[in-house]
Image 1 (cartoon, rainbow, N blue to C red):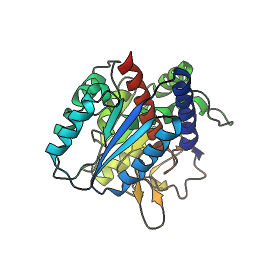
Image 2: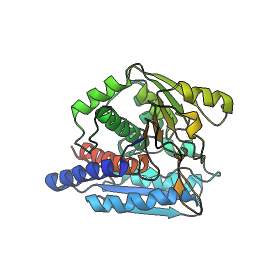
Image 3: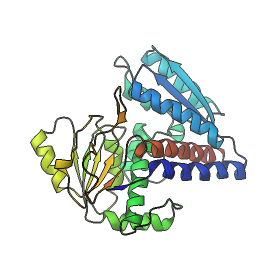
Image 4: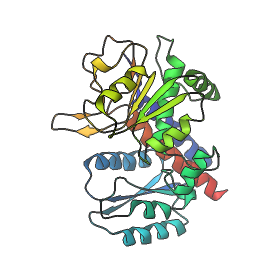
Length: 301
């Protein structure tokens, strides 16, 4: 089993952002709106704030244990008009009493660093370039770039992401069968749109897919991207040599933080795996910061 070192990839992205901020003498600002008590959200919010400050991005947390759709709409309106705010996100999922779509619709596409405004999503499906894309979807592509670059190399290291890496990714994904186990607005939908820009076949499964059907889809796929948060959804008996497992799921038990893949017993298989919590998660945070710097530079030009 070969591991995609998401933590190291994230550090590489962070260092480049830090260099850009210092060289360009810019002052980006990220605001995170965190409502409710979702445990997985809290883990990521803490890391986003800490890493933003680490690279030189001013970070502000708007913490709301209880809120309403109307209150969130007022906050987004204020942030849309705030010249100092480069970008902001609405940490998902929101409490059940909130009209999530209505709030996301109110986020300015120019400051939508999570890429979840309907305009941002629409432009993604139209293959436009002048918009911000879901940080999670971008993180998955960064992990796949690493696999594409080092698939035939025994020396695994983190190198600068270049145009060459983009070309290698396109070549690697050519004619691949990709199974995406998620259909959410945060992961499944934007990632589907991104993958469809390559010459690969994308199949979408989700919580309503029958277990026996899911098992067959996993077996028939070259790349499996799973983001359900269901512990042990994929085990050693369901995978085989040559596959790539991108684990975007996260769940926390008393013992540890884990993902959708139960890696126990997979050590001797010739597969690629993104570990949890040091795989897609840290790269997602790094790509969010990258989007914030992009939004800032575009906003001041």
